[in-house]
Amino acid sequence: MSETHWQVAAMTTADLPAVYLIENQSPSPWSPKQLAEELAYPGALQLICRPAADGFLVGFLMARLMLGEAEILKIATTRKNHRQGVACLLLQSFIALAKRQGVCRFYLELRAQNTAALALYEKHAFEMTGRRPNYYTDPKDDALCMALSAP
Ligand SMILES: CC(C)(COP(=O)(O)OP(=O)(O)OC[C@H]1O[C@@H](n2cnc3c(N)ncnc32)[C@H](O)[C@@H]1OP(=O)(O)O)[C@@H](O)C(=O)NCCC(=O)NCCS
Image (cartoon, rainbow, N blue to C red; front, side, top):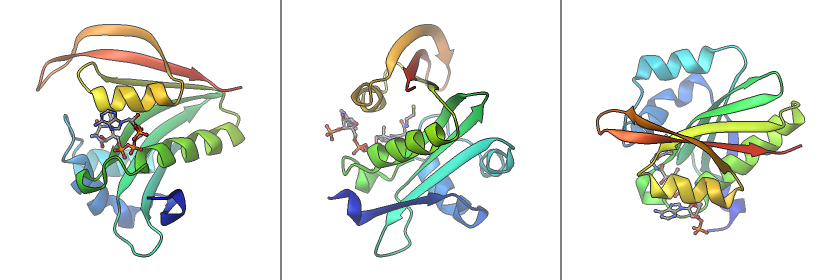
């Protein structure tokens, strides 16, 4: 599916129920309250992706920006739209937007067993910076720390 099929926009409170449906399919999902609090957090940036033709949300990204750095907290896409370039588009859109706001270093953590996410970040030139043993619970997993310098 081509990138022109999708459109990326800033997340609003109206998107939260659909965001929660996607988030709830991921390991260690945030509650609706946590998602709403993150949306209201000053200095945070959230994007959603939907088909250009209709309103159904297919993915979202949540991140925080501070002093030239950004931490990506969440990225997820609907299962039926996996491997259609949605996460790529969200990540590329976010990096471009954050760079325009002066961000030049991006951080994130992911579960070591999340091979799909690892491949996504490696595809976008993120590099491994560390590993935190047993960082995650339910299910138990190590955290991989990754970073991208994008001056
Ligand atoms: C990880 C996730 C966001 C990827 O979303 P997506 O929309 O399917 O990703 P894209 O179609 O944009 O794929 C981009 C690249 O990621 C990699 N990738 C994505 N899914 C993959 C999989 N299942 N296996 C291997 N590589 C994968 C590939 O390199 C892919 O490029 P390619 O299709 O040209 O090979 C999605 O699987 C998801 O929502 N997972 C649950 C939530 C989650 O784990 N989020 C990450 C938390 S750190």
